[in-house]
Amino acid sequence: MEQPVIKEGTLALIDTFAYLFRSYYMSAKNKPLTNDKGFPTGLLTGLVGMVKKFYKDRKNMPFIVFALESQTKTKRAEKLGEYKQNRKDAPKEMLLQIPIALEWLQKMGFTCVEVGGFEADDVIASLATLSPYKTRIYSKDKDFNQLLSDKIALFDGKTEFLAKDCVEKYGILPSQFTDYQGIVGDSSDNYRGIKGIGSKNAKELLQQLGSLEKIYENLDLAKNLLSPKMYQALIQDKESAFLSKELATLERECIKEFDFSSCAFPSENPLLKIKDELKEYGFISTLRDLENSPTPLIAENAPILENAPILDSAPALDSAPKKSRLIVLENTAPLSMFLEKLKNPNARVFMRLVLDKEKKF
Image (cartoon, rainbow, N blue to C red; front, side, top):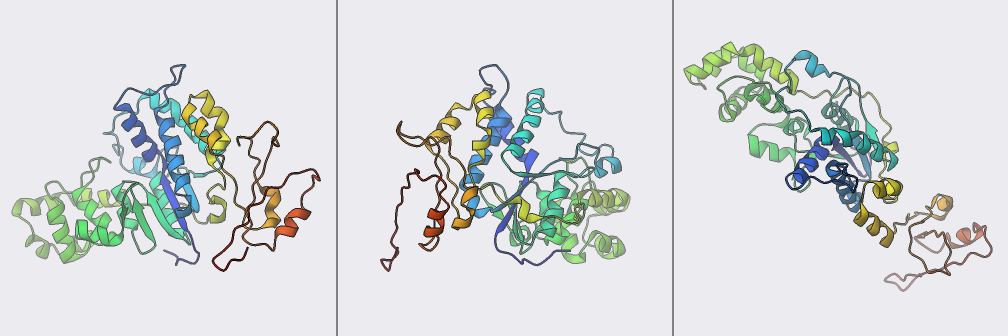
C-alpha cells in the first residue's frame, strides 16, 4: 500500500541494466569502443556518461538507488519457462563489462539493491511503494506505468511521464495497466495475452468493464464490444490472459522495509573514487575533466568540518599546500568555530566574503 509523501526531496530509482544495455547498444552502432589493450569499454563508457549526467542533475535526485536483476532464477521464469526467452543472448563483450560496472557503482558510493528471485522491476516497484519521497523511475519500460501516481513518475532521460499521460496515451488508468497487458500481451517479455485483440479493443473493454476479471464476469457485454472472431479468442485465451496479467504485475512487497537515508547521492563527484580504474580502462578525457574541475564538498555547517574531502586532484601552484579543503559557510556565525577547529597553526586560510542584497556578509 502506498505511503503518503512525508519528506522533502526526490528519490531516483534506476533500472540499471536496462540503462547500461541501451548505452552499450547505442555505442555499438559505431565502431565498438575498447581501451588501448583491446578490452571492450562500450558499457563502461555508458556508465561513466550516466554518472556524469546524474551528478550534474544531483539537486533533482538527492536520493538514488540502482536496482539490479537477481542472479538466481526469477519467479516469472519459474511461472512461464519461455518468459523473455525470445531475447538474444547478450554479446560476450557486454558480459565482460557487467561485473566491472557493478564494482564501480559500489566504489563510487551508490546504493545498489538486488533481491534473490526478483527482477529489478520488482525492486523498483517495492522501493517506490515504500518511499516517503516523491519518486522518479529512470526507465523506458512501460511495465512501470502501473505504478504511476501523484507520488511516482517515469523518466526516460528526456521526458517525464505522469499518471495523466498514461490516461492520455492508453485511455486507461495506471491501475488498469496490468489488465491491459493481460489482453494485448508483451512481445518483448514473450507473453501473448489474447491473440487478435489489440490496444484499441483492449482500451474499449477496460473503459466499459473496468478490469480483466469484470470482462470475464460480463461476457454478454464484452461480446457486444468485439467482432465474433475476437470474442472467440477472448473465450479461448482466458488462461493466457490471466497468466499474462500475472506476469505483468510487479511485486510491490519483495522489500518489506528500507533505510532511505542510506541512499543519499554522494556529496562529491563519484568518479573521483574510481580514478585508478578510469586510468586503467583509458578514460583519459574524463580524468582530464576531473583534474581540471575538482569537486569540493559543500558543508551545511561547520561542525562537520572533519568530513570535508581532501581534494588530491585540485590543480595547485608549486608553493601551494599539497592538500586542500573547501568549506562553504552559509553565514558568519560558524566562522569562529571553524577557526578553532584548525589543528595546523601554519595552515593558510583563504576566504571570500559574499554580500547579500542587504549588504550584509
